[in-house]
Amino acid sequence: MKMRAIVLVLLPALAALGEEFPFQVGEKLSYQIYWGPFVAGDASLEVAAQETVEGRDCYHLICRARTTGLIDLLFHVDNTLESWLDIRELRTLRSRQHRVEGKQTRRSESRYDYANRCYSITNFLDGAYRSFPLEEPLHDLLSAVYYVRTQPLRLHQPLTLTVNAGDCNRQVRIVPDERRTIATRPLGRVPALRVEPNPTLSVVAAHKGRMWIWVSDDAQKLPLVVISQLAIGCARFQLSEIQTADPVLTQRLRVVSSD
Image (cartoon, helix red, strand yellow):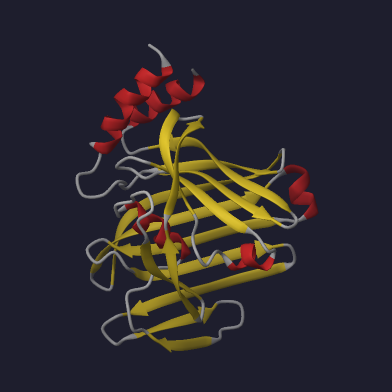
């Protein structure tokens, strides 16, 4: 069977995994990170569990990214972001970060109290605690990725959400501006939409760069490729493996990737 035929068979199977959400507990997306032509590290996005936070059912989301090889010797990065996404309201209830970037380390937790209209940030390194007013539903950087996957994405039609990063809340506008077929290792060639968050990540803006995300143009809206074009070079995250809660489907995907 040709690759395209296999992909056409598997995509409906992926869609059938969850009736309400395009993802479920057990999904793990793995990425290879490139800096120019060089492999720079690896990363993953995972729906780790369904947990209760403040009496609300949440998806516990985890993102990990680290440098490897020569790049790691030049600038060590080992980051873990966690988010608890309210399943019913699709808003963040809690987020944590443990970031090691070169000589800088950050460890903190944010809690979002919608009933009392405030959110707090605790710095685990020095014990500092800060509180801020909460006027609307917020997403952290990680939950924003999964929120977008639940929304309809159409060419040239904008989607806006409020993203919290520490003491700063930003209205982020996402507009799919191009449709193209993207080749990926786990799924072969799939139709995809390109989106550019505006404003972009602070680290990208600091290096006078832009960031584009290619998302599969189907029910799953899988982040396939992330490209950051910076003044100091180009970074690319390339989807390399998909794991699901269904071991049979995961094995089929691995067969496709090795074809």
